[in-house]
Length: 270
Image 1 (tube, rainbow, N blue to C red):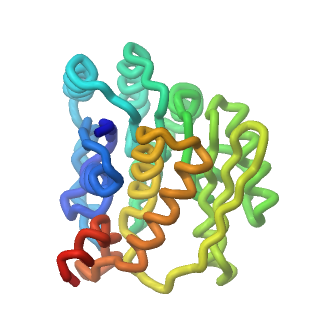
Image 2: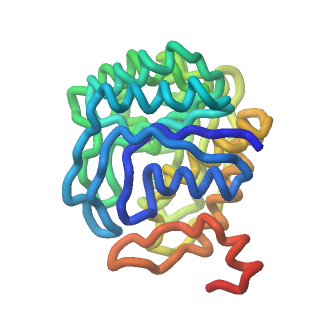
């Protein structure tokens, strides 16, 4: 079994962050490990508060994993500040994992900022160049590039811009654009040479809490299991689509995706 590490914030309600990542690793055949960067008090409706973890503890968590266990892929999620970004970048530079999937988490589902605005330049200079695959949604890609994205052509242009910042592969998720115009969702992957499009029918559900975390973690697990970037993304998209179709109606807001839908079907759990 391959081993995947999530470096991200926690979600006490279990639908996103570290909790979603470990569930996703497990569902996709990998052993999951975690480095907690922030403790987030959130639920399906709102973020109440955020407490960043001491930088030395973040560094020690990374050392604890890498000095003992082979890491086949890394997923990076919420990095709230410049200092957290620099600590993670410096620590990973010691170990040089090849397959790093970065979900540049900036805003929670309910609209709360999870990355300080002043950290944007550090994200671009220290974190993005580490990415084997970067997975921004449209608002995140707009923030990173400073351009407005209103079409698939714009997504491709933005992907090229981000590639120049150092990311090997860029997957721009088109869900926000499809919501605005009520059409199929189109995600665009750019590998520095070719573009690949992934088209999915929009699923009519409010229960999408943690979908970004889940997708990036599924991609990391697929890379750990030996798939190429375009294959890893395609397989992850299939997994997330089914997880959304079988989403759990938990909480009063945006419920979580169903990470173990296949297991639940076998056991007759609904």
